[in-house]
Image (cartoon, rainbow, N blue to C red; front, side):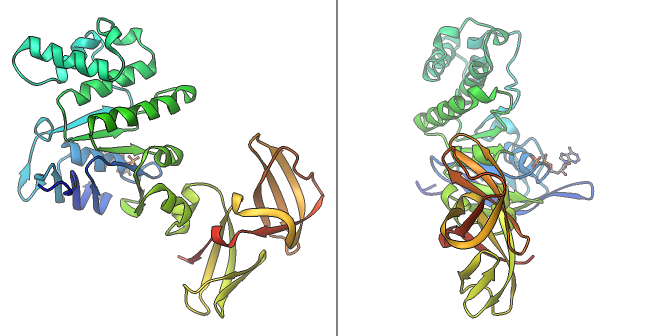
Length: 346
Ligand code: ADP
């Protein structure tokens, strides 16, 4: 395996439960040192995909390779313990009757108990949990339990980490710091990861690349900035935040929308399109079209203003500051052409 061979490769993976298709021809890689977040609405097939990599589900079609080896497919199906992966689940799955050190030792391979203990101590130190070695899981906070689960999964030096909604069980207050800690622990260990989440913000925050899934297929794969800034479909755009959707028809190199003209060269002349503009892509000022404020809410970092245009179209804008215009105020609303996306109607 060369240094650039992906650590995990899904190749045309399909999976059904009875007649129901859960994963439908998925091809995806996780590269060396990379964190890929598989994100999508509930039931789109994320967990099944992860379980197929882990060997918790038997592969029905396609191929899965880990660390340069086919682990499932081509007539082969290695058991989970032979796949060189570490797993962390939402509920952490720590053994309640074992102390922290024994939970972590459980993950360490080898026969020599002293060596195993040393390795477990080192990895606990690595995740900042050395002083809790003699503690039982129930005596720890959620964030601490998550670290122990991570330590146990990292103990055998897996080629790849598989994480299924690993932060869902934590309080929102704690989640961001645990997410950041997890990333730095993975980076220090040099362990790539496939992380499943239903939370678009978590995916944006954690991922080197985001893989957006819809109905068993990949809707788009790319760095967070591309997924957010250049969504491939209205589905992807909507998944990452509210989008104002304006219908129009492509005329000579532009689309006429209720908010004004948008230059475009992509869809063919005459094509029916939806122009999607995120709330922060709209702004109030001296340019644009007249609108009336319906409502405004101050959220702190910005305010959310609902507007109605002359033709009855309603749009939502995020405006900076804590002093937005009030209901019935007359304003002008314009949009940033760079933050407007044109989608052909599905
Ligand atoms: P996600 O993780 O995105 O929520 P899953 O991979 O858990 O999605 O599920 C994908 C689809 O497969 C869903 O429609 C779900 O109901 C179905 N499914 C998942 N596990 C099973 C199972 N063990 N038996 C039958 N259907 C299942």
